[in-house]
Every structure is written in C-alpha cells, then in structure tokens.
Image (tube, rainbow, N blue to C red; front, side):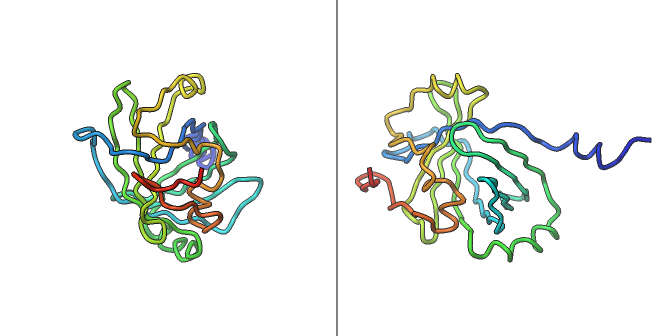
Length: 180
C-alpha cells in the first residue's frame, strides 16, 4: 500500500500561472461575455518572500490557493476545500478581502479574458487578465483597444494588495484617471 499523503500531494494542482493584467479603458464588446460569477476572496495574514495564501468562494466552489512570486510567471497551487474549512479560515481574512464580479469574455484572437469589476471600497475599479500556456504566447499577445494600461508588474494592482488596502489605485474605466 502506498502513502496516502504522498498520493494526495501528487493530485494537487500545482504549476505556473502565466498571465498579463490590464486596466479596463473602454467598453467590453457586446455579445462577447460567456458567463458572469461573483467571487469573494480573503487573504490569510501570511506573507513570506512574496508568497500568499487565500481562500476563495467562486460561484458554488470553494478553494484555497497558494501563490508565489510576482509578475508575468508565478507559482500557483490551488485546491478545493470543504465548506467547514473555508468557514473556519474566513474570519482570519477580515482585514484583507475583496469582492468582484468576473465576466469571462471571448477575444478575437481565440484567447479568453477575465474582466473583474470590483465592489465595496474598490467600486469603479475594473481590470482584465488573460492567461497563457507559455511566456512566449504572453509576450506575443496584442491587447484589444478596450484594454488600458498594463499593470502586470505593478504590485498595487495585485489582488492581495487591493485586499489589504496597500497603495489602492484610483478607480479606472472610461473617462477615469488611472494614475499613469
């Protein structure tokens, strides 16, 4: 018989997340939205060498995610967790939470974009992110005209920074000053 813990670790979804993030500077094209869902996520008070741990409720699913690094390519491990564990951890995130509506949008080049419209104290902030299979594909991507300034490497626009209120950017969108 094998080690059950070792088998569980092999099943964990661990890998790299390769994504570019932009402010939204125009209207999302009509008819391009595939689905919309509400996301609530909170960050546990742990930050070691840029690593972050969050719990997230996305639609009917609950996850714990550990991310490491910054910028275009990051390490990511995400696992579904039982509701009881989420309920136990959620109060620990009280000082670092965000809520957003996420629209999944089809792009003309075949990519999928996720448009996040933030709520609460971040109301008015809209960002779009696109994930890629390779760093080369990410670098080759040409953003549509409704994408605004790229913020992939701007720590103020990372979800954990937004959740903690660290350098919260001004609201963006049509006609808003994005601080550039």
